[in-house]
Length: 328
Image 1: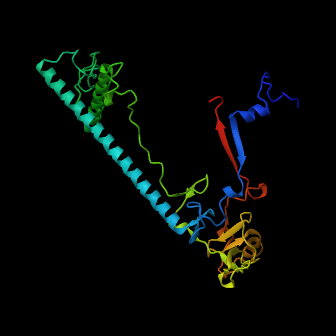
Image 2: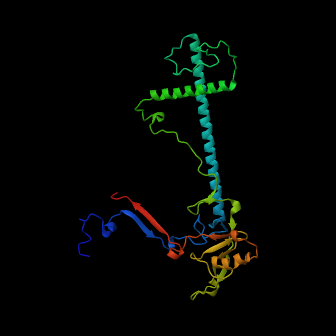
Image 3: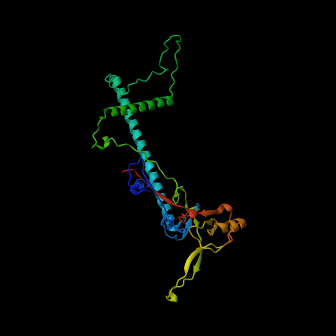
């Protein structure tokens, strides 16, 4: 690389040095172990889970946190349901008011037409309804036989409803035509951006939000997690022997090895005991029972617990991306 190659800006493309100087494009950064959640940490409070429970997909959480989360979701579902119900009732009332107004206009026009006051131009209904085939005579004059008059209530109701709908539509069109092209923006009802939005319920069930693919969650499906704890003696350097406290660690009940973020874990739905995947496949699946309490279990009742990994390629790599628009 020459001496002034980094400052050469006469090329038709960005060099690597210029890309580093500009805050432009997609920035990527590998997340390390400090950015990962522990295998026994709650996905809600991010602390070590107290009274841990697990969802059917293997996400661990505190019992208190998951109960509060489910309660909050249920309250939100009820609020959305009430909002949708209120909107439905309001729309029904508006439609009823429109039909009543249309019916009143029809009656007024009928009364005026009977008295000879209403002219054709003043009528809201521009289209005259065709005469009924029962009252219309035969134009050809071939048949002099009179038709019997039959009153069909369903047909009359359909015609009346259609007439009310046509009048309501005519009233709306007339109101739109009278509306000014440039409305007064300081009046809320004439604001151009004042559009009626339909409210729809987004949630119908309580969901587990630990992963991108959300799944249904309920109190009945929660699995109590039972870790095997081991105590290690701690030797203090030059301190009092009474102040030394044993260090707790979570281990596999079969191989007695400690759990880390790189360890793949499995939990049994029947009893809640946690094993590493290798011991679970060698002993639990073959014998069909828990090696700690002896509870019978099936292969479909074994759930793999998902973790965030260790930050390395073998233990689950994580990457953060940020995109910036050029020259902004």
